[in-house]
Length: 230
Image (cartoon, rainbow, N blue to C red):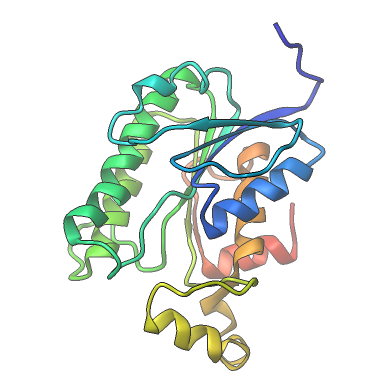
């Protein structure tokens, strides 16, 4: 049995091959309060670190096999998702809602005292009335997470997430926003957030488990946490 140093945390990251999840992973591996990072995903990360335990899991529709590696965790940062317009509506709902609920079910059974940071999105609608599928599905996932029983669930609702590093953008809208980002950031500062800043906020709040247990952090709130961490 491994004895964890006092004050050190074990953190699970889901979706570490994605943009925000990748920054969350790198930040967590460098964080002095994190003793162990368990990264769960469908593809290999291609990195090595003494803090890192990588678990390949091909199908998030059934997370039962993850119960053992998820035991004894202090927090999870859930960044798994899909871009609107890149998958069918059925696939978008499956990834956004079904995968979140299934993972949370197994994670709670294995680590019921853990905190949970969830990457939602601006405009998420827990009432289910929105005409935008993404908003309805994120809202549905938020409601389900609140009902699981975690002592701390943190809902992050970023607006436009600036990639920081060059990448292949998923659609024209993202290409346009990236090209006008300097102007957009100046005119609408609370409608943008850097991907690395967002990731840092998600990790920090999860491992500290501070603030309201069911907190919803809109883009303005995330920026405030990054600029004045507590």
